[in-house]
Length: 230
Image (tube, rainbow, N blue to C red):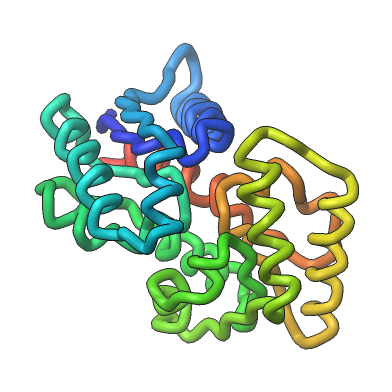
């Protein structure tokens, strides 16, 4: 079994989910008492969020690059960045290590294609929804990406940072997300990407008829599959 190097803490709430899902998937695949070989480097999210707010992506790349280098030195065979937004600096992180990064958007694109989805709503932080670093991975695979309008985009972003990253789960916020999903479904969305690893704490497939692609579940599943495959 290969060793997975997790860069977590962004936020720690979703990192817990990664750890659980990877171990559950490995146990399901191998049976018995098998569990995943995992190394975790958990960063201080306050420091990362301040870099995001200032637009200091260079500093955040250094912080996460150092984490990746540390994981490689400790014996990790791959890097899993446990957040969507910070894949913006995945190329810079990758340049610091010789082991592969399992990219969350590439794993999500594969899941969409397998499900026959060609037009999808992307929900995430404003960085993920507005910028191209994530969307381009989907567009390259022939998937059309939809995002909410400016006002709804701000609502999605505020709930992520103001509630979900703090472990706050609000029924009112769930209703807001579901309203946005329903409106975009009416505009032709065939599915919805939960493109922030915390959104799965609020929304699940049971909440909507539109196919839900939880990036935390997809990414963790891909990591587990990679770890047990020759």
